[in-house]
Length: 470
Ligand SMILES: Cc1cc2nc3c(=O)[nH]c(=O)nc-3n(C[C@H](O)[C@H](O)[C@H](O)COP(=O)(O)OP(=O)(O)OC[C@H]3O[C@@H](n4cnc5c(N)ncnc54)[C@H](O)[C@@H]3O)c2cc1C
Image (cartoon, rainbow, N blue to C red):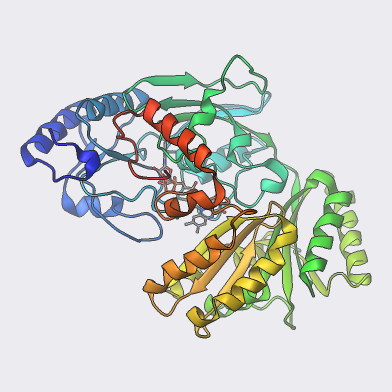
C-alpha cells in the first residue's frame, strides 16, 4: 500500500479494496463514492482549494467511527474529518487522496437534564438543534455564532469556537463537561462525565478541544447548560472614538456585571460597508466613528430593563455615546443583530476578499487597525478595509476587499507580521491550512515541538487531518 501521507498517487486497486471494506462496515448509504455526490464535501465555507475526497464515510455510531479509523490506520489511509463545513481556515477541505469522514449521520440529542444542567449530544448535531433543545426545557446552551444552523457540535469542540457570548460564558472549552473521542487507531476514549469537578488525573478531553481533529474524532459531548433568562435586551450604541468604546465596555461591565453577555464592536468602515453592500436599513440618521452592539440578560425584566436604560441614558448625557437604540421587539433585535451577523454575506459579495481573525490586548487594538490601514493602502486601491470584532474578549476581525486574489498573501504578511510579540494569529477560527505558516508568530518553537510530539504519539501514522495546524 503506498504511503498516502506523502500525497503519492493512489493505487486504484488498493483504494477499491479499502473502500469495499469500509462499505461493508457502514452498510447502506454509509459510503458515498459517486463523483456527483462528492462535490458537497470538497470544500469548507470559504470555497478555497476545493478538492474531491476519494469517498465519504458517514458512520452512524461511535463504534462505526472506530471501525473506519482502525481500518484506515491499518492501511495508512489519510482521513479528513468533516462536521458542518463552516470552518474558515481550510481544515476540513480534503487533500488529494483523502477519505472524508463526515459526522452528519452521527447526530441527535441523547440526554438533557435540567436539574443538573447538562445535555449529551452526538458530534454531528448542529448547534441550532442543540440550542433549541435546551431552550425547549427553559435552558440555554450559551455558545452562539452566525453559522449556528449548519456548524456542528463536533466542529465547535474541535475548533474551540468562540462567538457572541464569550465575555459571559467563555469559549466552547468552558461549556464542555465531558467528551467521547476516537483516536487514530480506533481506540475509543469515553469520558462523558457531567459534573464540574473531576480532577482524577489528566483531563484528557482537553486533547480534543481546539486541536482541529488532528488528535482524534469527537463523537459525543456532554455540554453545560445555563438557565435561559426570561428576556434579553439588545441595544446599538453609536460612539465618537475608540476610547469611548472601551470606556462604555468598562462601565457596562462594572454596572451590569455578568448579565452583559455580548459586546460587539464595529468600526464605521465595517458598519457603512455592511449597510450598503447588504442593503440594510440605516439605524441612525448620522454616521459615527464606532458602534457597539450589546446584549444584556434580564433576569428580572420589570426592573432590569429600566436599569439598563438608565445606564445608557447616563452614558449619552456624559457624552460618551452619541446615540443609542434599544430594541423594542424581537424583530428589532434581530434587525440590529443582522448588521453584525451578515458579515459573511458581505464578504461573498465583495470577492475577492481576505478575512483575518486575530486577538490582542485592547490597548493595542486601535493603533493596530490604524497603522495597518496605512500600510495596506496600496493593496486596497480604494476598496473596503473593514474592522469589527467581539472586542470584550480582545477579538478583532478584519475584512479586506482585494484587487486580485493574488494579493491575499501580501495582506496576510502585513496582518500576521504586525502581531509578533503581542497578538494571536487565530482568535477563534483555528489554524487549519491557511494559518499554519504563521503559527510561529504566536507560538514558540518549543511549543510547536510539543504539539508535534503529541501528534506523533497519538497519531503515529499521521492519518488524521494530515498537514493541518502543525
Ligand atoms: C458565517 C460564519 C460565521 C462564523 N462565526 C464564527 C464565530 O463567531 N466564532 C467562531 O469561533 N467561528 C465562527 N465561524 C467558523 C465556524 O462556524 C466554526 O469554526 C465552527 O465551529 C465549525 O464547525 P463545523 O461543524 O462547520 O466544522 P467543520 O468546518 O466541518 O470543521 C472545522 C474543523 O474541525 C474539524 N472537525 C469537525 N468535526 C469534528 C469532529 N467531530 N471531531 C474532530 N474534528 C472535527 C475539521 O476537521 C476541521 O479541522 C463562522 C463561520 C461562518 C461561515
